[in-house]
Length: 134
Length: 398
Image (cartoon, rainbow over all chains, first blue to last red; front, side):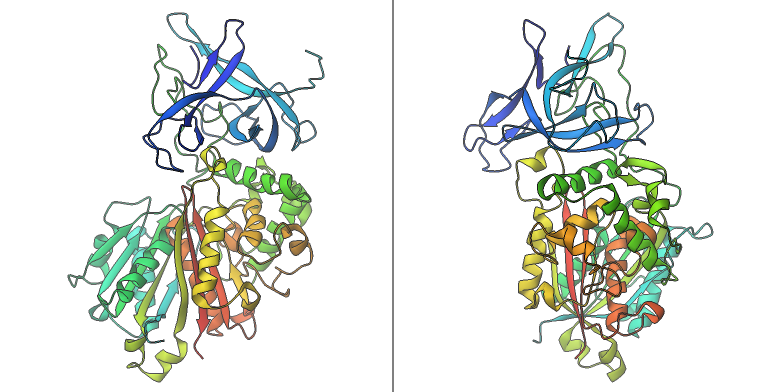
């Protein structure tokens, strides 16, 4: 089970993000849309997002709603022109290790297991050049 | 121009903790204050617009029961942090449409102790995974897919500007808060009137890097109200009323035009740019003609990008513009001499009228110790995420 319906895992367990792409103008959306907010077209096709991108902006959240673990790094990654929102993971949550323009790749993050034993998997971005060389 | 609309009277309550006053007390204080300042009564008012996000629905009608029920139309408006500006705009539109010659706009909020505005607290995964909502999510996304906290969202907006143009680091953003807190020491109505050193600001509790606590707008209680009047009606009033009236040279409200990036992170830039451009066109002036600006510094990271969005500096040059000292009260173009939302406070629905009050008070030459001498033209800007942007340009009576 994936955290959101635009996240899927391929046979090797690698994550893929698939947007709804407007067939008229190519605008991409991760949430369900009734019509395209850019050109008002009503047809969409699936479009896979590149798996490597550049960190366009970030913040390190120290105070959040109850139940949200802090600190964590929230950001927007530019994947070949498509902005994607997610957490930056597998990196210390401090400005020495998270920098604007750093290269990141899509990875999976565990969310939890439900009472039927089904795991849910989310996604995040991790640095391309992880220090542990993974 | 006979079809101009003018501010005849305006009032802002003290911002801060009002333990002994409820939403209606504060709204009534602002409304009655604006009527008294205008030298008119509820019988003169032909339309009312009211903004309040946290209290009971129908705030305008509830308020009428405290200040006068005359049967006039009431518009209860809601536009996030731009709610007050929206109420004012509605009253102005009614006058422009010729429906009436005088209107009242009120914005009020009780926010003391509201804490972090995040939306809802995170829902934990249930017994079995079930997809919900437009993302088909099995659990809440706040904290799992980025952040929904306001300090975090606006931190990213400022950092994005830094990514694009460089030079915007933690210290720079903290310096903006340093300026606004310094300005607040001259504003007796500000919720906080304390000067902080740069070091104190940077070492304050980190909320969402790079925004520390003293770089965030202050939740507080407060209200503001304005009486607006048609030019034709104004010319029938007493010389003293005409002398103190402030001309609304532009009243603009915009929403987000589609942008790829605004689908994942709110884009507060494009709609502000469009609102500012339209306002300058309507007023027939440019940013170089402004004597002071009150802009929506809900976080220190936001103030920087709005220098650029409002055309106060060359495109991409906001960092150098700030570093030149231009936006300090003794600079070329003072910004947020009230102390801004970071120290004056941000009772959400009141903010969009309170910033008009600040500008109008300077244009009238009634700002006391913090008066910007000789101020003739000012701009007030607010933005509510979602988004709605209000820009008003005001001019002193000739």
